[in-house]
Image (cartoon, each protein chain N blue to C red):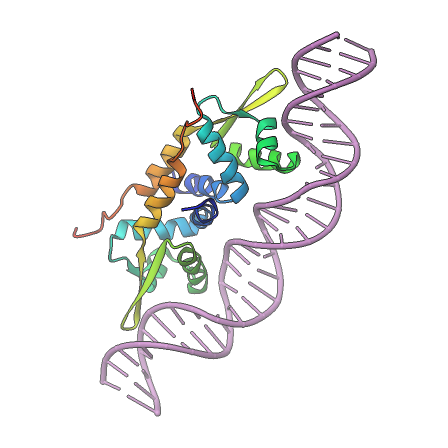
Length: 97
Length: 97
DNA sequence: AATATATTTCGATTAATTTGGTAATGTTTT
DNA sequence: AAAACATTACCAAATTAATCGAAATATATT
């Protein structure tokens, strides 16, 4: 993961509504949750929800899978682990070198 | 760390210039680096640098320590570990429960 | 094909952020 | 106290993001 990708990913996480959505999905596990379920649980207008979901998708943090009339949002854990690794890598490398 | 604090912290990291600054400091180790050194190394106008540094300070990601005429920026690793823990906690808790 | 349900797109408004020049402030050294 | 250095505050312009109602689209069921 390069710096711009990491910044983009962190930026999308850095909004209370989107972080709430993402955390809910992280908790949900590998199956994720339907948009409708998120809208209902998190009590958010659906057009706002859609925008935030689109942002999370654009950052690679979630994907969406259609299942009949339902669209399930599935968290992309690997993307999260990658951005965390990006933040930690090179830590203190300049110290006493 | 609560959700709003985490969102704030992630938001400030979610900008290419600020992430560059923070990563440079993370690499530098516990002593950090003077603002002047950052400005020079990262080739950024000092008023822009100041804004970004202030943002990182406001998120608790760095602190500044005066040393004569130099102000050193010191990364707050604990804040970083805390936000990482926040992102990981509750992972998959809803699965098969 | 009509209906019901689920989700997105459009569009407009409001609000916040980024940027960097210039001026001001604070600190150390002489 | 003056000079040199380091950093911040103030300001304005340009860009970008957040919000959500209303209209449109997609899918499933009958």
